[in-house]
Image 1 (cartoon, helix red, strand yellow):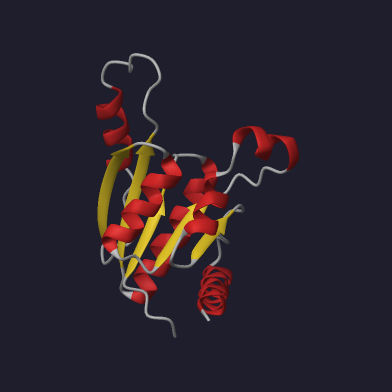
Image 2 (cartoon, rainbow, N blue to C red):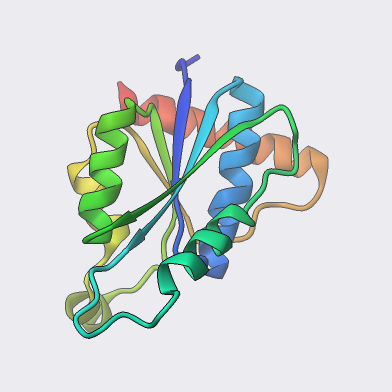
Length: 157
């Protein structure tokens, strides 16, 4: 099995990030890995709303794992999200990035870009993108985690 000691979960607090967070927590628990939860705030083009950084920090710190055995570190960075995700992954020597993907295609992706796509293309470690909810039942959840680990192992080789 691929040794996973550090998992990075970048979040934009969207529903799909929530799905990826659930999977990252399960993988961290099952692998005994540390989990780094990161929110990268874009540099504001206009005067930043007063207290915005504190608001984002509070939102980030509310993301707690359902399992007390999982070691969690929260990080709030400022800058281009894809660049910050890759930088934190490099700094921390993460073994896996688990992130949500909005699944945009065509013109939407061309106009908006895709942080997940940029991370997948440029990351030096495997990246697991999640678009759908994590299965609710324990049996289905265990199978989903097992399949995710197999996918990560296959991309590493």
